[in-house]
Image (tube, rainbow, N blue to C red):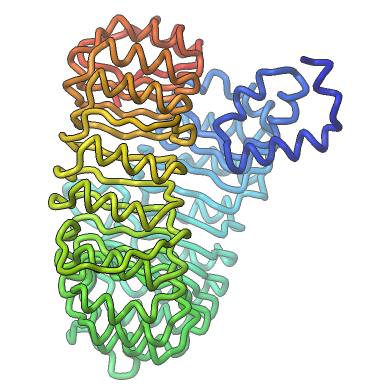
Length: 575
């Protein structure tokens, strides 16, 4: 094979591998094992590396092998983080993004060393740190003054609830004077910051483009309004858990409603679990923003009037999230649909009054739609017969939690979405294996299927092989050994299989899946009581492609056995 690799110029192989990396990245690993030439050509394609405790001993070799890494993720690292960063600093990589979340404290010494050698680093994520205070934030700013993105969200708080030892307005103010190139910041969950922090960020960080402030209880509409009106480059704002309609925090000179007039670049607005008003939505409509994304998930105190005004004014909107808008009915959606011709993704989850009619209205009227989310609605309920018009653009349907939905309804949904690639009907008690089989016959492009907790799905089949199905999530479903035999026969290139809690699955069924699915990489058999724990080792040897097995109850491999299986390329764990 080594001789055959030179038949084509390396530039041609690079084009082929780049195509694999973009569209079928799971096949890059086996390609790299073919010969040394393929290995050297595929190594530069890996741009992101996630470190686990098991990969740390191999880190020097990994950093030497993958010279073009841009992102390094060490979110679950348990060890000397300063030493790890020191090693990375000496690697001569040109990292752009570093994820250091879920740590006990900030690795200040390591970040100092990193800052002295790696001027390319633009993004740092430090969410869920056990300890993060003003001093840490200032030290990070001094070490990496060229940062463009910073995530310091949701640090762990002790029971004293005192500001000392946590991030406050003083820390944000000091940081904002040092990170002059900052473009994106997430300060969610920092309970001791107030409007002062937003004033400092919008005043000192002139390139600021994105602000995320969730669960910051001392922020008011005044601070949000100041940030929107005084950040000339702001393109995205995300707010959670505030009362933007409260009269208690109204400034007589500046209200959040009139702040949008100054936000000439704002293209994404996300309000979640927030009290808003029709007046606020109308003010956004009048501002004529270049709005592409609007999310009002679980917001309160607005009506059809407000949402109609903003959609009428922004008919080039591409993403719309109205999750939890309880007042929406099928007639409301029919009225709104005339403004949604450019929407590609819509979320109507938890809108309990919406039925099948809304689904067919969307597929017929919204010609640009690629994704529909209608979890927890009233799908399955039909008021009258509607015209079924195919929409070839739709690729994703997330319809979980619709207890009334039947096989017949699902069949109709699939009939108008012939190019479907992702289908989630988890927690739909009325769906059976026969219904799923019909879907897979008419939609042979399905790559991702979720039937979690669908007790009626015991098996499913199709007349031809489903060569494109790569992910099957069937946790807690009624699937049994016979069903797994059918899956093995019809889905030979399955990559990820979740059978967690499937009581009808035994060693026999798992054995058939492992034998038939030649590319299987991950399998979850936790809670499968009839799977013999001793079969796990045999799985690894009989299917070399396996990279992760979530273990069944009763299997407690020792360190030596886990290490032995890991050296064969497979991580065995409990979650």
